[in-house]
Image 1 (cartoon, rainbow, N blue to C red):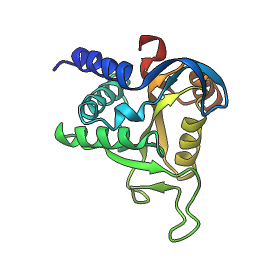
Image 2: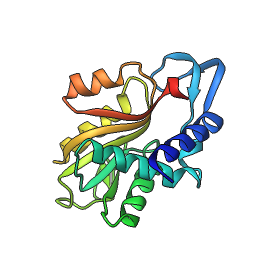
Image 3: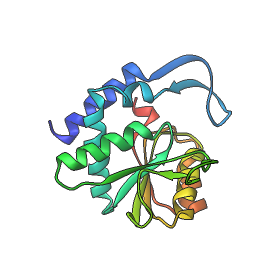
Image 4: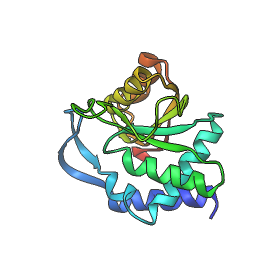
Amino acid sequence: MSLEQDRERLGQLLSARSVKRGGEFKLASGRMSDVYCDARVTTCHAEAMPLIGRLFLARIAERGWKPDAIGGLTMGADPIVCAVAHQSAIAGAPVNGFLVRKEAKGHGTKRQIEGILDGEASGVVIVDDVCTTGDSTVKAIEAARAAGLRVLGAICLVDREEGARETIETGLGCPFDRIFRIAEL
């Protein structure tokens, strides 16, 4: 399948499985909306995973980013991280994955970043499933930077276009991109 076909099919899956319209939904940001996107219903779907992996890798390449690893705040980013890492290995250009805990573990190594060893990655891309205000992505960027990682940029699967881009680009000086805008679904 071509990237255009991948994007079309993934959009169909997101629209059918993840986007709910009508009603009153409380978002993670605390805002109320009549549109809700539960992207995990799609990002955990077997058919969607390779599409997600290929589309994120293509967007990373379009931006000219050459990450050693990709990661994001658990749970929304977890299936995306795995899909991208898996597809990168299939493509012969492995990009490792990492997960960012909401807060550092209180025991053991007390790490907030899991999945990569210290010094194993320098340039990274932060991923997320749905961005509204960008709070989850901001937390992941800040944790990655605090761990000494150089954040090349951030990409979300679905941008609700409610301030995430401005918060991430202006507030953190981090390039931001997306695969879909909510209006496209």
